Length: 221
Image (cartoon, rainbow, N blue to C red; front, side, top):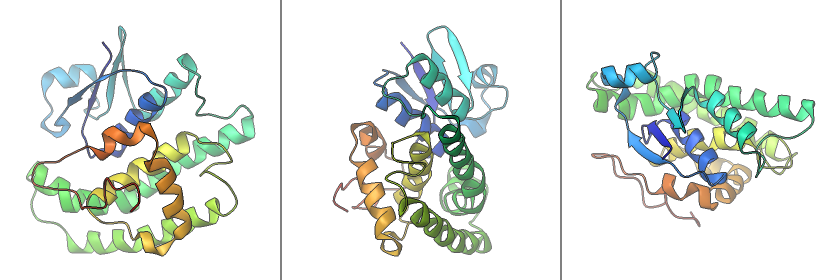
């Protein structure tokens, strides 16, 4: 059986979970408290990060590398377009969310509000929380500009870019840190992707000590 070592509120883990589910690849989920640096986990990924996927006899790390591997071995349904220019745009936006959005928003909101407590590293830094709250507005505006020209984030077809964006936003939505009133365009996009069967396990996540808001699993939020 395939096995994914993940943490429920890791956006990188969620991106891989969405890809696996969209492609209907069955996998056992194993929650990994990766910050504890368990020796068995470090043998699977010396970088000490989730997700790690055991796919058949292969052990793989890095969410983007995993997703693109899955796209190669299980091309249907496709999550990467055929044309080089379109593939570039998907990769550009995956990197945007996993690098820029993560550094400016996810780390500052989710990292301070949840992971400091979970990891036992102290109290939230209010300056970081305020910076993340400012930055997410700019990112939502950027997403609005993209989605006003396209059906999906990177083009007219669902792609890995949508899963990267939705993975980060769903983690933040779990702690009520997304102002969905700021953009009906982004809200409509998220409602579409949230209603996909691949999203069901994401909406069922529960973190002890951090109950999700009522709207989190509501498809008509």
